[in-house]
Length: 175
Picture 1: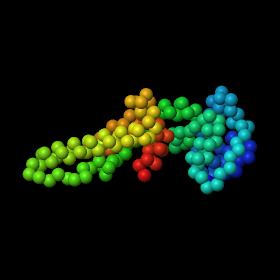
Picture 2 (picture 1 turned 90 degrees about the horizontal axis):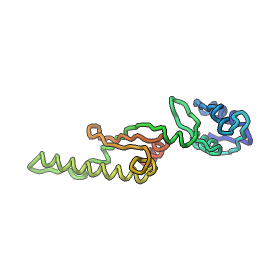
Picture 3 (picture 1 turned 180 degrees about the vertical axis):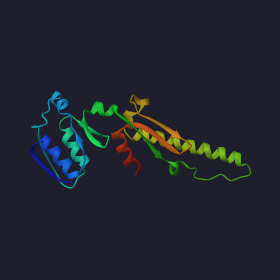
Picture 4 (picture 1 turned 45 degrees about the vertical axis):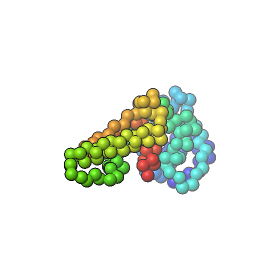
């Protein structure tokens, strides 16, 4: 999407984005007023060509000390502290990342299964540590945040509860 806002009122800029992108954007006008932001008149100046709607919204809201989350099929503007406390749980299949490199084959199938399982859990622990050290490290409970991560052996998936922003970053991490 391309935009060229030159001191457009915030309300006009938001309505333009909603119309062009076909999304719902919820802005609590009373809450903005409490933050000293006039929805009908606060000027937006931002020019960009062929960028994501996410980039445009992040810039417009960040200029006002705000951020946004996606909830109930709508973009909702809010302050960053509140957004950080709103957690989303997502499941990430990781079977292809944790399977043993060498499948043990030998005379004792039970020993082989135990070795393969131990290798899988070792890979899981390495993957979890890599994620926790690479993607928003401060967001994890062990570092004082609220994010959690666990492994489901049955589905060979990581179950991650963290902020929506974390999950956005996590998608980039997995690519």
